[in-house]
Amino acid sequence: MSALPTDEFNRGFIEESARFIRSQVPVAPKLLIICGSGLGGLADTIEKPVTLSYDEIPNFPQSTVPGHAGELIFGTLSNVPVVCMKGRFHYYEGYSLQKVTTPIRIMQLLGIKGLIITNAAGGVNKAYQVGDIMLIKDHLNFFAFGGQHPLRGPNDPQFGARFFPMNRAYDRALLEVGKRAAAEVGLANHCHEGVYGIYSGPNYETVAEIKYLQLVGVDAIGMSTVPEVLVAKHCGLPVFGFSFITNKCVDSYEDAEEPNHAHILDVVQAKAKKLKNLVIKFVEHTSDQWL
Ligand SMILES: O=P(O)(O)O[C@@H]1C[C@H](O)[C@@H](CO)O1
Ligand SMILES: Nc1nc2[nH]cnc2c(=O)[nH]1
Image 1 (cartoon, helix red, strand yellow):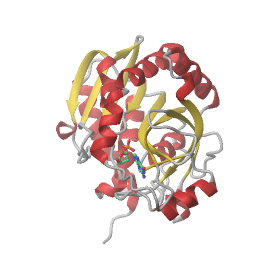
Image 2 (image 1 turned 90 degrees about the vertical axis):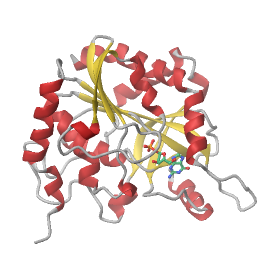
Image 3 (image 1 turned 135 degrees about the vertical axis):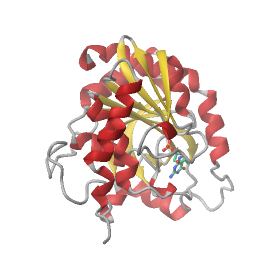
Image 4 (image 1 turned 45 degrees about the vertical axis):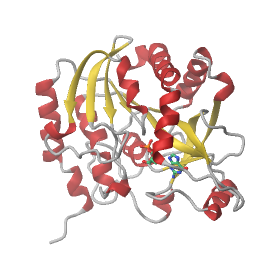
């Protein structure tokens, strides 16, 4: 008999993962930080870190992409107990959207109150430059237009309602705090608010696809984030997200530039300190909300 997609969300599996983590970690996290490609250095700022490798945790997926270490780092930031996922999962790796998002549900069982989500993305908006950040104000979920959704299948009401709104998926107040934090760490002139689009990958976009994305209002394109945000919103978690613009998307046949993952990781590395400072400032300004 074929498995329902929600079998990956099976409570027994998720609870087993959560139980194991509880047995290893002294303090339950209040905030989950998901690190995008090359952004694992965000975890370096965590105080009193306790590291769990993904392969130690029962039923946890394994990272397969360079720039995604495959570790959970628990500790504190501005006195807030946090957990940092150094390594996320992508649909193109072969995981179902349910498997991609199980960490959100596991962390929800552990008691998180919010999500900071980051990614490396291509700049579709012509005004965006390499090294800019885009605070995510909304997304375009191309997977859903094609009927692909992590919450397809029976709903578990203990996590959230069958039908749920997404028009305020990216918390407006947190976005304002993000803007302030970006200015404080010297990123004011490199900070935008925009719409993130998800593309399945693993290839980068064609010129025609980039022209289409420009037309429909996508500012930055990537291969992640949206599934995790859907599952986080389903279980009521406020979300703050930003994209780090690692390349300008090619929208002309005359342009010989080609995106390249190794180069993308180098670009992230070059700005790592500022991005860490941004996350530190953001948590500092919002700490009361999570405790
Ligand atoms: O995990 P994120 O979304 O940051 O990773 C992006 C999308 C692909 O996984 C990869 C392409 O270079 O970077
Ligand atoms: N889909 C997609 N993902 C990316 N991640 C980093 N750059 C890009 C890009 O140009 N396109």
